[in-house]
Image 1 (cartoon, one colour):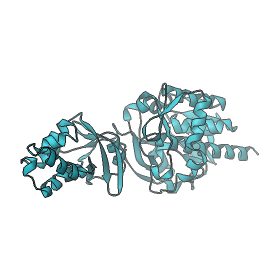
Image 2 (image 1 turned 180 degrees about the vertical axis):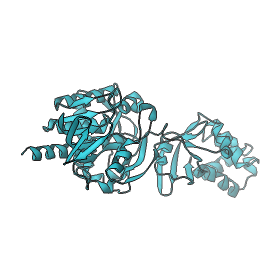
Image 3 (image 1 turned 90 degrees about the vertical axis):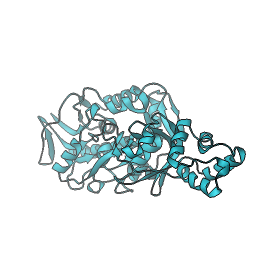
Image 4 (image 1 turned 60 degrees about the vertical axis):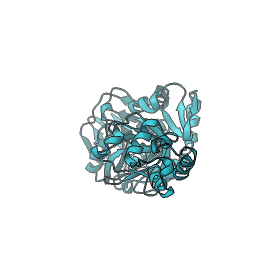
Length: 393
């Protein structure tokens, strides 16, 4: 069959590109090896899909080129997607930090995307492997199908249990596109045996600022039997490099609070004072790490200030991460230097596009990666439709 575009991947970005191109008059085929469309969407946000964020801006994304995402995000904003959600009568609500969720099920977002594809006459083939990709005379071929445009929307290798692979990078390299080394992002850290003390308080959570270099996130931190997790940790993990230390600020006013505790309960020990500020098990672990055995009243202020450093800058050097199996997204990917920021088209291969998680653009936790999927998909879809009209004229 002859199409204007073949889109590889029936995830958020691929379906958005297909719907956009199809509704603009292009004949589009979507191919995916999975038996169901939008599998990552269905498990996102605890099953309610954190479909975008009120605070989307370019600074909330990581890329070797920090300017690349600006064009697409400006031309298809979070409010454009919210309008589409409301057009489909999907009730939604805001949670913390501008995160927007469906009141009902994440399946509503998949149904929305499939409905938009249907409006555009898009053909979707699920349970279908990609196979060999041919390219000659300005057309791309997969089996018996051919098209002037081919879209890489297969995502990254995060969450392999859903069938995710690194095929996007193989295709990119087949056509000479660069690839920024992929790595797990928005992922829990593992700690070595020297941090056994904190592994033993698995299940304890607290509010903290997690930071690396000049980047910090103030959200919840969760201690696990493997290491560290929780929103603040997932956020900072996208910036982490192997061997680097991360710091947790549990209480920026810890020194003054410990001095106040010294005056209020001079006969108490450090653990009692820490228990006023932190969950008991964490207070116990920290007291053991600090090792200040004296009663508070017998401590010099300088000793308390030194002890407070463990609350204002509790430092860990992760042994690694829990990898792609637990990573919500993949950082790195198809090099943006190979692509047009306006259309997502490969500069050296006319008609080849790359969008969504396959590209070296990674958003913060909280709906940002979905917004990149929508925006990059729309950018590619519009460009595909323009190419189709030009070819037909």
